[in-house]
Image (tube, rainbow, N blue to C red):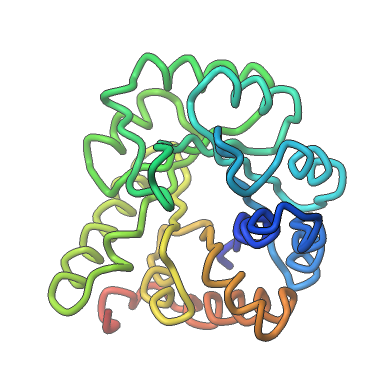
Amino acid sequence: MIALGVNIDHVATIRQARKTFEPDPVWAAAAAQMGGADGITVHLREDRRHIQDRDLEVLRQTVTVKLNLECACCDEMLEIACRTKPEQVCLVPEHREEVTTEGGLDVRAYRDVVVDAIARLHDNDIAVSLFVDPDPAQIELSAELNADRVEIHTGMYAEASGENRKQQFARLQAAAKQVAETPMEFDAGHGLTYHNVVPVSQLFELKELNIGHSIVSRSIMVGMEKAVREMKKLVNDYSLDRNNAAQLPV
C-alpha cells in the first residue's frame, strides 16, 4: 500500500485571503485523517502566505499520523522545526515571487547548507526528505548527504502532454529505480491530481505520495474526508499490481 500524505496549505490560503479564522487547517487535518490520510503535510513559508506558526504548533499537538513539515533551509525554519519536532522535515527551495514551488532543491548548489540542515534535524531525531527533480546527480548527492528520503518533483510530468508526458514519466521511472539502489525511500509529489496520479502510483518503488491542491479543491465540493478517501482508493486500487506499471498508458 502507498502512503498518502495530504497537504493542507491551501485550506489556510482561503483563510488568509480574508485574514480571518476560518477555514481552520487544523480542522481540515482532522477530517483528512478520518478519510484515511497517512500523513499531514504543511509548508511554513518565510512570508507566512498560508500556514501560520500557530497552525504548526496546534497540528503538532493534534495530528496522530506523520506530520511532515516542508520548509526552506534557513535558520529560522530549522529552529522552528527543531522546536516543534515533526516526524519529518522536507527541505524545499523557496522564492518569494513564486505562486507555488517551481522546482526541486538544487542540492549541488547548496550542498553546505543542506549538509548543515540534515545534521541539525537528525540531531533532533527528525527524519529528513529532500524535494528534488528527477535528476540523477541530485538523487546521488542526496544519498551521499544522508537524506532519509527523497520526494521527486512530479510537476514537469503533471504539466506535460502527449509525447512529452511519456518522456517525463520515463524520467520518474528512472529516478525511482535509482533511489531504490540507495538507502533512501522514494516519495513523489507536486501537481498530481485525480486525473494524472494513477501512472505515478504504479511505480513499483514508490512509498508515499504527497498531494495537496487537488484534494483541497475536491474537498470544497464533497468535503475533506470524502476527497481523501477517493484519492486514497484511486491510488491504491491501481497500485495493487505495480509490476506491470511500465505497460500502462501514461
